[in-house]
Image (cartoon, rainbow, N blue to C red; front, side, top):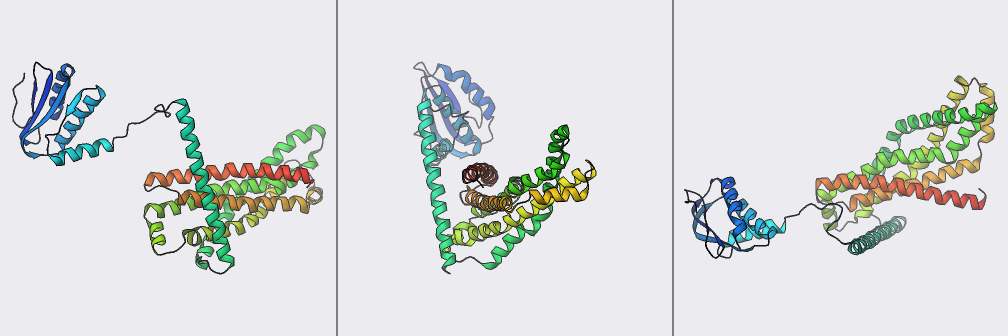
Length: 374
């Protein structure tokens, strides 16, 4: 047994394998690392660990850290540990430390296979219920708007429209031009084999007007505007601004979601038209300047391929994508957690969910159009 030095707990192990740790006097600034090392060397022979207060006069955070390590060691090695004689404030701190002790898990290994399935099912049901509740609130908010009872402000709508409309023109035009250019290149490689380069005009026009223009705008706006919605509303959640709105009796959906949805629904079809035009210009740049096709002939084939049916299908895609992006962005923001990390998670979820649902809706519209012969 080692003799106790100043400012250090007394550590003793008796013949009954009772390991006593006595704290007394001024327990501050002692060598906690050396004490814990000696504790771990002695503890394997113990069957019971007893932490005793013998008149603690002063203590600091190092004492709490030592107590935490001792109790955790006892729990991990299934050794009984008693600390009832410690002061109440120390016992409270110990309970608080272990209540907040979250050990990292790897891939949910703490759950059995059936438990994992059950947990996933419960989480899915909660998510579905949350989504349906949000959609119901949004529809009710739309109803209040058309009945003149909504608290949506015109200035919020104009601000959201400016952000997702004029400010997005440059990036949409550039990306769409490049997509049309790439589409013409890919088509030309195959069509040159048959000497049918002129049909590049038809390929680019139909592809951009019917689907590609809307999809490219949707992806751009999901990453640019949908993520912005999630980050903005999520930050308001962290700053408790959403709670303030609720306290004032104002509908969060009316005030925050409705103007963003209406703005994106209005902007998406217009941006889709811009994408169609820029994509066709990109295809014309390849056809005229690289494939040496006559400008008049390229324009003639483009106009022949351009039909109102294909154009309206593309615009309808853009309209649907606008609803999806706005709903995903606003929902992720409203369901964001209360810390900074949650804002990043909500932003990521909004973009991923928007893109996934855009692809799903594209498949559904394509099948419906095929069945209806559109």
